[in-house]
Length: 116
Image (cartoon, rainbow, N blue to C red; front, side):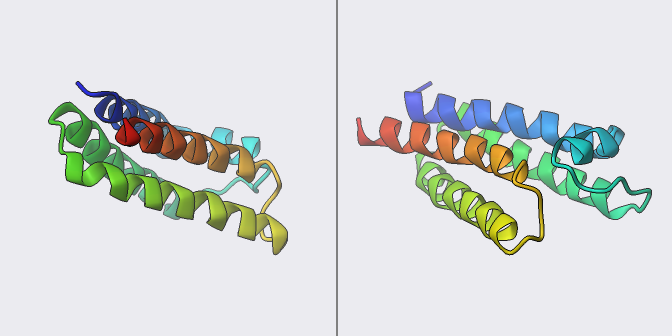
């Protein structure tokens, strides 16, 4: 597996953890980001979507689908910027930026690997 493929593959594993947490124990993740607990199903729906996205990342990395890798860089930077915007607009706690930083660091890792 190339370095870029590994970065995407491992990011997919991270997304599996986030997605499964949102499905199985959403309030634990919500409390980390200082968001209110919920009993509504929407957070588990988001978890399932995250798991589906994790599958794309993990499979694309393991199958070395190089055309997917630059797309993930742009998407992860977008997520980081969106999380920062939510915080600046006071729609979310600054803790949300921590999750965005994981996306940004993953994007940088993949981008650097693609440059080699």
